[in-house]
Length: 278
Image 1 (cartoon, rainbow, N blue to C red):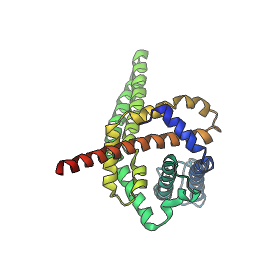
Image 2 (image 1 turned 90 degrees about the horizontal axis):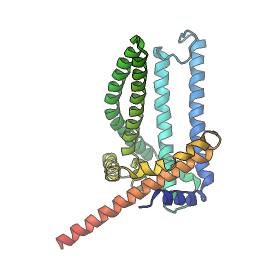
Image 3 (image 1 turned 180 degrees about the vertical axis):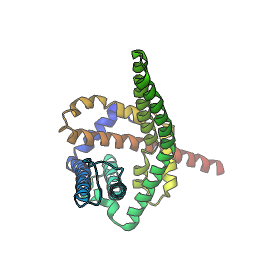
Image 4 (image 1 turned 90 degrees about the vertical axis):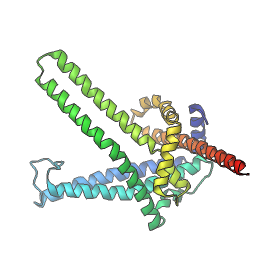
């Protein structure tokens, strides 16, 4: 498999063929999320002005049942619209990494039929349930830890105790972020495996993704960490237009290497099994 330097070089060479398309993907995602937040804020204000809901001057108060229902519905609608686009964008980038230059229409390939839309929604739904099954119990433990250390810090008269409690809370937050990343990592290959074989059962795609990342747990992490120094220019904000697509192409290149290594290994195993039968 390619090392981090080779991955970045390959990603740049392929980006030179599709900069316009990947920047277009970036603006569609940012613009879509911005439009969603704006629409949600306008809806909340409309409900407040019309007297349907009543806040104490706070727009983002989700304790109101009507506004909470509207928010949940809006998030589900955004997920249903965004998921096919995200899978189509990943399919487009995977083809680019594999040396196939495509028309920009390929980004919207998952909207081509109702069947395709339902496939990606079902697959992404199973992925989300798998993540939540692991993450929610961890969240419960983390909340308990925040509660305990928060009470110790609030009730402690000793400054040293408050400092130690604050450090423990920061450690808990760091651990939760690392665990969230680790959970997401197991499913990193799911959209790309779907792109390569849309008819493969969702559970089989998820199983393959877990196997691929389990066999090479550090490869993807090392590839992404090699881009860490780009955080500094990213602070200029406007550079994100180019940095994020670059990150995503490197990520796609790394996942592609893992998939190809897995497929190659399985091919060798099939050949060995055939030889034994002969």
